Length: 438
Image (tube, rainbow, N blue to C red; front, side, top):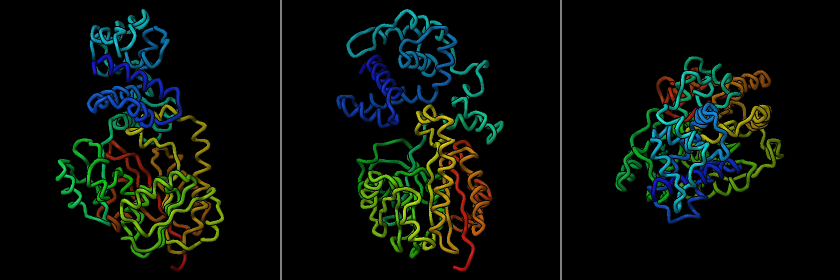
C-alpha cells in the first residue's frame, strides 16, 4: 500500500471508532477482516497511526483548536495533526498523500492546508498546554489522578501512553516457564522472564500468537504480568474450593486452576453468557478439568446465598474504569465519564459485599481492579472493612511473601502496581480474611 492508502485506512478506522460504541481493537479487527488484501506490514503501520491518534488525542485537539481552523472532518484533522506532530512528517509529504488518488484521501480542503502549514515543524507538546492536555488524559480525571501520583503524574501518564508489551503466563498444568520459553524459541519466538511474576514471559517483539503451537497446545496464555500477580497472591492451592466471582472470559480462572493443580473445586461466575462460553474454550485448551461455569443473574443471585461460607478463596476482579489498561485500550479513556465512576463505585461495593458471603471462616476475599483511582481501590477496601467487622485486612506484604517470596514491590497493606514503577498494567489488589475457626 502507498503511504496515502494507509492514511486513508487510518482515517476510516478512526471515524468508525468515534462513531461507534465498540472498542478500538474490535473496530480495527473488523475493518481488516473485510479487507483481507491488506498485508501484515500494512496492517501494523495502519494500526500504529490509529493508536497514535487515540493515545495523543488531547494534545492533537489542542493544536487543532490553537490553529484556528475549524475541522469539518475531525478524523481527518486528527490524522493530519498526528502525521505532523507525532510522526514528524513534512508539509509536502502530507499534502502529497492527500491528493485524491486511487485509495488515497481526498485532496486537502483550504482549512486543512492552512492546518498543515501551521503545524508543520512543531513538536507534539507545548509549554502552554494545560496539565491534563500535556498528560493526554480527560480533564475530569486529572485532579483524581494527581491526588494519587502528585508530581509523578506525568511519568505515569507517559507510561500509560506507551504501547504495552505482550506478556504470557506459562500454564503449570502442562509445562513450566522454562519449558514454555523453549517451546516458543523452537518456533522462532524470543521471550524473556518477567521481572515480578515467576510464571511470566515477555515477548521480545509482538507476534500473532494464536497461530503458534505453544498457544494452540495450551502451554501459554496471554496475561499481563500484573494480572498474573493478582492471581498468585490469592494463594489458591490444590484441594481448595475457589470462586472467580467476576470471571469474564476466564483469564484469572485459568491462573487459579493452574495454581490448584486441577485439584479441588473452582467455580467461574459471571452475568454474561457469551463471556462464560469464551472461557469454556480457553479452559479446554489449557487442560482445566476442575472448573465449572455458573451464570449469575447478578451479585444477589440465589446461588450465592445457597453457598454462603463454603469457599476458601473468593476472587473479585471488579468492573472498573480500567485506567490501568490504557496502554492497550487508549480509546477507553475518551469514553469514560464522571457518571461512569459514580455508577461503578456503589456497584463495586455491592459486588464485594455479596461475594463476601461465600467466604468461609479462615478463608480470604480478594478484591482486584485494573484501576488507578483511590475511589475504586483503597476507598473501597476501607469502606468494606468498616461495614464487615468479621473480616480483617490480609496484608499484601504477607501474601506476597507466602506466594512469591521476598518483599512486596507495590505496598504493604495493599498491592498497587503501575506502568511507570513496575512495567505492568495498573493494578490494585486488597485481601480480607474472615475471622473465625477454619
